[in-house]
Length: 120
Ligand SMILES: [Zn+2]
Image 1 (cartoon, helix red, strand yellow):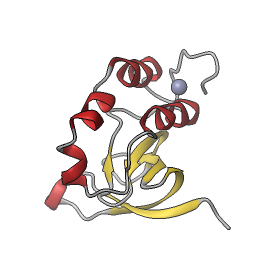
Image 2: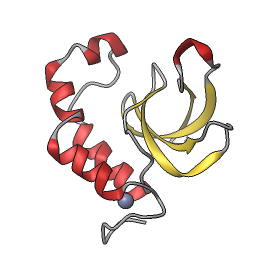
Image 3: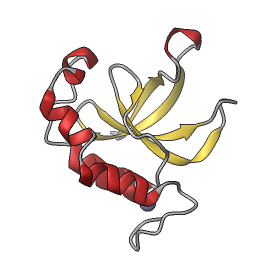
Image 4: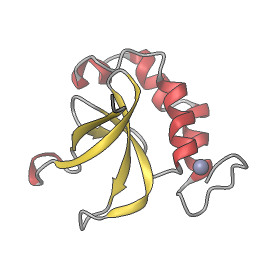
C-alpha cells in the first residue's frame, strides 16, 4: 500500500484551478507535498498541506526533513476536520503560529538554504 495520496493544492482561491500533486501522509488529513511555483512547476521544496482543503500550512517551502519535523509538531490536532473548523480552533492557530513551528519553517527557509544540521 502506498503512503502517497493525491491532493488538489489550493494556491489562490477561486482564481486558479487546484493543482493535483501526490502527497505523503504525515498524519490523518495532513500531507507533505512538493512545492509548486506560479508556473505550476516544482520549486524544489516541500509544503505541509491540509488534505481536505488543499491549503498550504507552511509559509515557505522547506526541506523534507523540516517538513516531517513540522508535521510532528502539528500532528497533535485532528486534521481530518473541515478547514473552517480548524481555522476557528484556537489550539490549532496557536500551534501553526507558535514559536516552535514558525522558527522551524523560517530556520529552514528553503530546500536550498536549510541551516538545520539534520536538514537537506
Ligand atoms: Zn530544513
